[in-house]
Image (cartoon, rainbow, N blue to C red; front, side):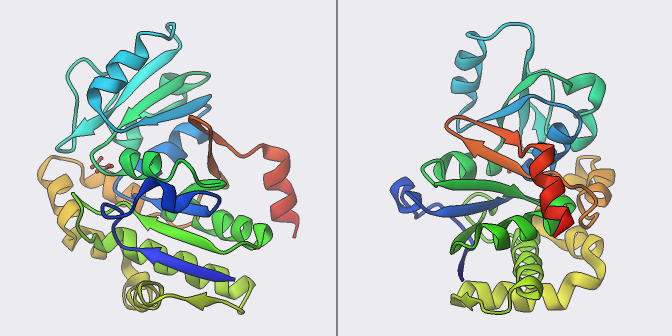
Length: 249
Ligand code: MLT
């Protein structure tokens, strides 16, 4: 199984992903928020790559659809929810669709939309995603959302930990250079993920904006058995029965 890590995706064309398996990571906070929303009963998450499109698109839905997301880490004016996972409670999102715009994460997901299999990963669901990828048995691209086109430490460490988890289940892995580097970063930082995020660029920005609890939440490792899967235009949780099968193996 071959695993490629993309530390950023800005120079990659959408068509690059056609027919591939892609795992998008935006630990702080889009893929953590998506995982949380689905765990709390959200029907689907519709990722979009512009605020204008989010607003236009929301006009076509009824009252069961929420607008969520951030700009400069803060809730967007007129939106129901920001991008803090703490807002995506059962009361807020159960049975609802959420149209989500975020600066980097939702854009990375939209970029990879032509992938045959497109999965969202974060620290919270890392172990179950690794099991799923091993079961799929296909080569895959790990897409780090990064920060404004630049490398981000937390996404890269998460990519490395995901690879380490996959290797535990299937040691016959071939990595590109970024994959080797991600694995080294994971070895360096896995013992204190929260500390790593507190000194990361985006972590610092979130702390400055009053979101230090989000960092604690996003640092929790493999606490949810939720696999967010993108299909045609929205992200849904992989059905419970399939998760049960994965857990049984
Ligand atoms: C992003 O997509 O850039 C992030 O999720 C931003 C954030 O919520 O802090």
